[in-house]
Image 1: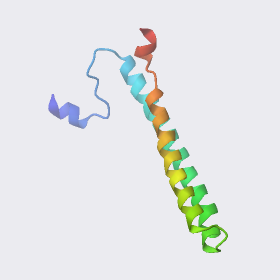
Image 2: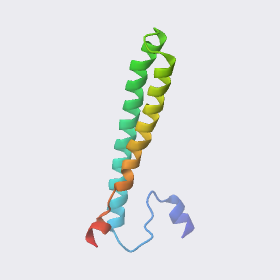
Image 3: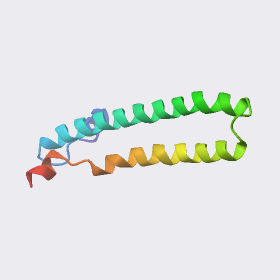
Length: 91
């Protein structure tokens, strides 16, 4: 029913229980990628902001490094697209 779907944390739309295991594994990997991205962003800011404030890092280099940091975070997140489910492996 609609109430059960809204109240659930996980809804299976197929009769395959491997989908639940796939969802749990994907959520674990997603959380690991989020933590890695936050670490990268924090480490970048801890290193780059003091350098930029002390004028040891030019604005051009700082903006290029910020752009690289953003590209790195997005590219790191795109690794999740290569996730293969248990149901895919069984085929």
